[in-house]
Length: 267
Image 1 (cartoon, rainbow, N blue to C red):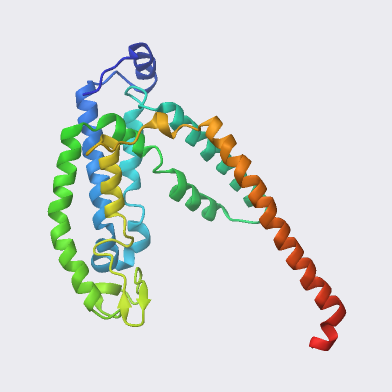
Image 2: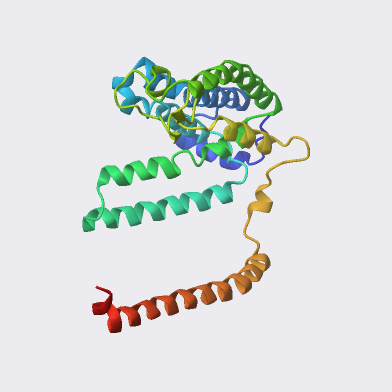
């Protein structure tokens, strides 16, 4: 349940983004959209590989409208928990936009490459704060329970993919490009199930850590920079880096001397 502790800020934001919504209704709508994003994440690879391979590039962005809708709805609610860390991430994203813009203007990159990098690195970054703010224990348990149910048939699919050849339809899909096939050794593939990347385990572990189970829980306070610890690490790492750098410089200098004086004999 969301408690609107900052009612003044919520009202001021509501005047900008519309009337103040019912907190519980807003929470449930955001949770539903997060569920949609999650299941599209799980089954997007199946749609791209087997159902609609010709639309693979379009389906790669199928989650983005739901994600942007989550952010728009969250603007009508309270500030997310740990919003200071989120603000720092947004600042880093703004710095990325500035550097990418400079590279595009100088001709070192293209606008499409810069937009693709922004999408992959920063678009989903605020979603963790949305989940942390609007999910309750029942939502997390429901998501994990559904994930475990789906994991059973996916495990069977992974086993079949492992024993199948890399050229089999179950591995490379119905297209001729063979997208998502990663060959570990000759004739052995790394199976991904319905995914194009192996991420389902990481998402499940992240959700568990965010809500806290078995004495394990992510704490935003502990993720804040620790000045004394950073100074102690720098006191050790900087001399070690200088030592390693000096060895590399001496080795390069030695190679230069050998090449300068005896290069003709070697050739």
